[in-house]
Amino acid sequence: MRIPILLNCSVILLLAMTGLVSVAHAREGRLGPDEKQNPRELLIPRDDDSFDPLEALHGSFSTPVHCAKIPGGLWVETDGKGECIRHYAQGIAYGENPLAIVYFGGDVLLRNSKGERFIAPAYAEHTPGSFNADMKLLSERSGLPAIFIARPGTYGSSGDHTLRRYSREIELIDGAIAQIRMRYGISHFILAGQSGGGHIVASLLNRRKDVTAAVISSGLVSVRQVMAYWENRRDIPGSTLYDADAFYDPVDDVAKITREPQPQIILISDRDDRVVPFETQAHYVKELRRAGFQPVHILAKGDGANNHVLSRHLRLAAALVAQGSKPDKIRSMVKQIEPLE
Image 1 (cartoon, helix red, strand yellow):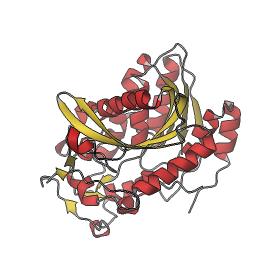
Image 2 (cartoon, rainbow, N blue to C red):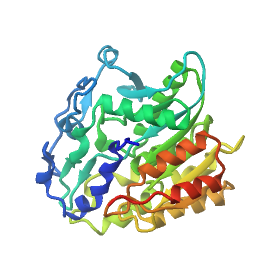
Image 3 (cartoon, rainbow, N blue to C red):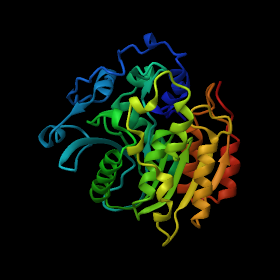
């Protein structure tokens, strides 16, 4: 099964943070910690057109009129400011679609130990056509519609990826899902996300009542703990790079998750994850259980030297959930996936 998706970009995050990845590898440029971005109007790549790393690095803007020209573009406003959020949907039936999978990728904007920002080299390898092909495969495997939503500032959505993890990112995605629900006649969702995409899933789980299941791999679900872990591993303190106190931390609001009925919650982790420490993921599971939920925590072996990329496991688990498989079967099949070198 193909579906490499952007999630594999997270595999170099640790090396970037520790300065072991040369910024020369970021073919499309870099920005120092004090350099300002130069955003431009959102491009409209189609089919096999590559996404531009410079656009992801600097950010982009759109308007309702401009967004209407973008395939899969959804104009979403929050706090009086709008963004064009692009989505890639496959397997949509005419009329009603009672249940659909929505998929979120990880971060693509990385920093090295000097605070320099650059886009993961694999970014330019993706196209609208590749995302549609990926979602077609996931739809076929799960038997449900599959929808990839591009996070603000990435893969065809306007916005600033530097502002990830703030509440506005969640509000924009939440608004996009509301429009998708209306457009396709969807009643409930299975949400799936890897790494930073897991932060999106956990955040939406706290606020939406139509989430049947949430599947998270290598999830950034305890934000303060992860930020504290990396604070002592940079040459430049994180507090000078972003306002971590303003980040939305999903673990704080697990008590808000709907209970009528309780959604199925599955987390997939590698104990040796060197990007999002296992202990931070286990803390989230503990808090879910303390709040009265029954998450299934699956331990697996991640791909890559950092044991972080579990996107193949995530897709399989989401498909099995869609098929109504029991937790024991999901755990068994996910654990059977051999890590890639």
